[in-house]
Length: 176
Image 1 (cartoon, rainbow, N blue to C red):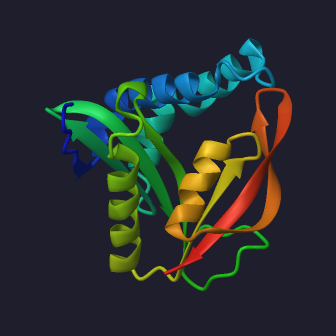
Image 2 (cartoon, rainbow, N blue to C red):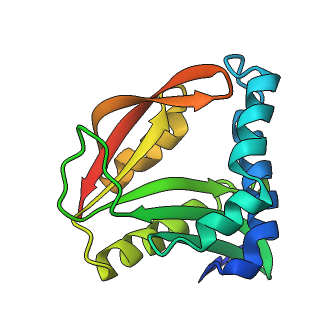
């Protein structure tokens, strides 16, 4: 059994192409086989959300932080944090949204997600956030269990637009 020790670094503007490829691949791998996700809705969402130009803009936002997990200098996963963003019914004075946390398929279950979560929480606390929140798809029980193990609790719902398909995300929050 191989032991993987992911390293985490903050992404910079030069990482836009790497992040676009990693985001596209990890999102596709996580959701393309679910029968509720039509291929055309997946394609529409991914082309809009994970384009290089879009990621360049997000990387230049001072309220956004991207963390890249690497194993042997290979991208193994990433997380996106957005500071100051709040959605009802989440309650916070200094919120941070965990917008994304994905591991490459070959590294799922090998500590990449936990390492990204730990660094996301450290980053949020360093920046003075009082609550971390996220949306998790109602049909993603594995992710929901992962977040519950971290201490997140469901506080509401919102719509996540996947192409033309309005899907329900559970809103979860964690007091820091």
